[in-house]
Every structure is written in C-alpha cells, then in structure tokens.
Amino acid sequence: MLARTSAMPEEEMEALSSARLQLYDGVLLSVAGLDAARLERARTAKPIVLLGERDSPERFDHVRLANEEGARVATAHMIEGGSRRIVVLGGTIDAGHTMSSDRRLGWERAVTDAGLGIDPRYVLPLPYYGSAPARDVLLRFIDSGLPFDGVFATTDILALGAMSALAERGLRVPEDVQVAGFDNLEMSQFVPPGLTSVDANHEKLAETAIGMLHKRIAGWSGPAEHVIIPVRLVVRGSTRARA
Image (cartoon, rainbow, N blue to C red):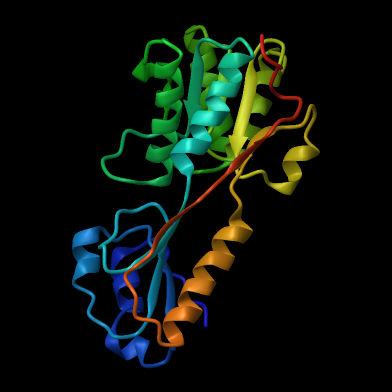
C-alpha cells in the first residue's frame, strides 16, 4: 500500500498510528516533515524502516544517501578543473539534516579543503525545487555581477535550469562555467554537453531498505541499523578535466 504524506508532519505521524499499522506487516517511511522528537513518540511493535536525511531516534532502522560526501566530491571535481567561485544552487543553511543542507555542507567542505573562502552570497536557496525557479534565481545572480565560474546544483533538475540560464546570458559550459548536479537522472546524459552528476544509487537504497524491513518482519530483533548508501560521480561534458 502506498500513502502520500506531502511532507506534512501530521500525515507522517498518521502513517504510524495504531489504526494504520494494523493494516501492514511493516512500514517504509520517507521522513521529510517529522523531527526526531516527534518520531520518538511513535510507539509500535510493527517493523518500521525510515528513509531520508532527517535525524531519527536510534531505535529505528534508517537508510539515507551520502548527500554530504557526494556534494563534496562533485564540488572538489570542479575545483580540480579550475573553478574558484562555485555557486551552490538549491542549498540552504537549515539546522539539522535535510537534503539541501547536507549537500550545501558537502560544497562547503570542498571549498574549505581547497583553501577557498566561504561566501554566503554564493548559497542560492529556491522557493521550490524545479528547473524554472533554478533558472530564474541563477539569472538574478548572474545579473548581480558577482563573479563565478562553477555551479553545483543540488539536483539534476536544478542543474538543467542553471544551464538554461547560462545559455541565455551567453556563458559557455564548461568553458566559462562548470556545472555539476546530483541524482544522475537518465535525461542528464542527453542534455548537451552532458551533465556531470552524482549517482545517488537509489536502487541500492531501495534494496537495502526493503531487505532490512523483510528481516524485521521475519522476526530479527537485533539492534537498529543506520546505513548510509555510498554515491559516485559520473563525469560528463559539463565539467573540465583537472586543470
């Protein structure tokens, strides 16, 4: 059974209610709205495996992506290709763990490791995640006159909007501005010149989470597992080789 929660905390708690859980053998819950304190109040004997970046109580099995490391690798790759002022498009300064804040932290780590200064003006949050707002926000940044030579977009969808904005302002990829994304969507290989992207390994995440849930349903009562799924960088034409 599939239940959509629209990232609403009340809907996510309802998915863990006693009435709902009577229908299931176990639950995979993608946590977007609930914090660890509210999750801690969920009391059930049914197996639950949490997905996503939000902090969670130790007692729950939890599977998440290596968001911070993937962003660090992508940003470091652009720095090796010669970029020195890299925008993080879709990044936020949220407290706690979210996808956007973890990927912004990875960008920050790579910039710091390279001895480059962190400038908060290069962190560009979005009103919502889509190619159109990414294009509009980057156009405004370009028009502000701040120099830049790289864009790390926190998703491939945002990277496509960024590449549109760069083309509209006559900036070449990767000669003038390198671009890297995150997710390695199938479309990314077909967008000229091909988008360098972090492969998020979603298939492995799903296999791991379902395997953990099956094990719990079968009666395994060992300690909770907290697994981070590794990612890899797929290099294409939107970035340059080592400078």
